[in-house]
Image 1 (cartoon, rainbow, N blue to C red):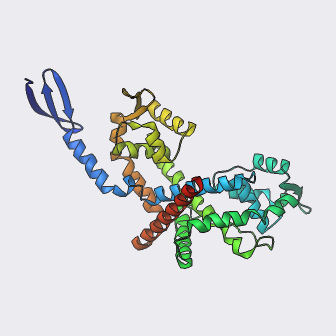
Image 2 (image 1 turned 120 degrees about the horizontal axis):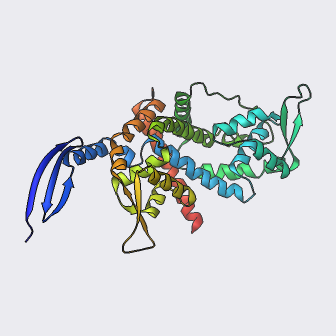
Image 3 (image 1 turned 180 degrees about the vertical axis):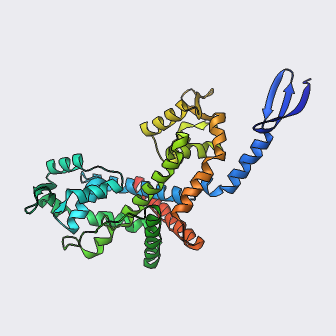
Amino acid sequence: MFRLKTAHITASMGVHKLLKCDGFVIVFRTTELKQHEMIRTEYADMFARQTIGFLVRRTAALMSKRLNEALGEHDITLSHWVVLSCLWQKDGLPVMYLSSQLQHIGGTVSDLLSRMEKRKLIKRRRDRKDRRILRIYLTEESLALSKVLPPIVHRIWHQAWQDLSESDLKKFASILEHMIHNCEPEYSVCLPEAAESVAAKYQLILPPRSTGYRLKLLQLMITRRFNDALEEFKLSASHTLVLFRLWQDDGIPVSEIGTYLEQVGGSLTGVLERMEENGLIRREQDEKDKRCFRVWLTDQGDDLIEIIPPIARKVLNYAARDISDSDITFFKKCLNSMLESASSQIAVTRN
């Protein structure tokens, strides 16, 4: 028969309960466990992936994936799409303008333009009045694509918006613009003048006017602000996504984390490696299935539950300031609708 003894001690982490069983000591940090449960309740929307940050990130990522797949059939990337869309609206734009559009959504321009020029999608010419200015012009091939690509992109976005009315989309776009201005008040862009090379009904799906471009823009603005706030803890937004999943279910397989993040391959491996190097997690081979590796929180990673959610809330509140609760709820509803519609279309395509 086991002999059980219990005792309580006070420590910096709170009240500990010690359970002694024939020489074995099991420590229950009761106060800390209750505190963590209270945090999970207070920040339930974060754990349910229903914050603005999670929803914007997921929608932007899913739509980018769909668009990349569709454009890829014509050997075009999303970066190509941004450049061509701007030129279809106003040909001969300066390199600096195109560079600013790509930088806003995390891209670079010099190598991209070189590759596009080799593909005969663009041509570069010096400005006749100011030789310091390099301008980008369309070619016959890229002009021809203006009749092919916009209908494809329009169809994909139309499918994502199928459950939203025109007034819903206008209201959604207005809230989106408000958040962008909140995140970076100094942000502005001189939109190119509309050209006749693209039909009028496609004008609003062309960057930088498009909802997709602005959604990606907001996602990166929120992520940059969040990363800045996390810098002192040597964390990134990607690390916190892993932590939120493990705070719900510790010791889950790597594949389940990939599903949660909607991310697989080397990028996920790199995130987990850095987290392990920083002492936040440990990876162990499953005892029953040697092909499976499970991820566990360390005490250091577990304790961050008291730090990260409040930081995330502060960043999100900054983005949503001066926006009513009802409008935030509406905005989330629209994003969830887009996610559901886009996911359904992906499932149909695969079948």
